[in-house]
Amino acid sequence: MRNTEQRINIIIGQLEGIKKMLNQKNKTCFDSVVQLKAVKSSVASLMDKILEEEFNLCFDKQCPSSKDNLKKIVSEFIKK
Image: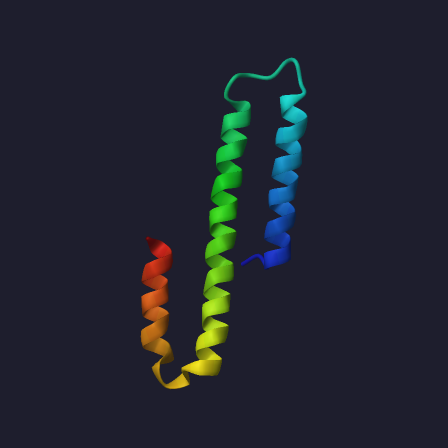
């Protein structure tokens, strides 16, 4: 699994690619849309990973006895 910094760098690279693509004259109509969808997916995945890490950190510190139950709740929340 990629770490957070690697994911952010990938997203930055995707956005830089879109920026260059928008300035090209010989691009197809849907190239930028495909790349934007990839960025959207990457950001959503990054958000899920960060939320999960933050919740786990908070639960470990504040609620160690009910950690498994809270992890299930958070996992369901993130999926929706």
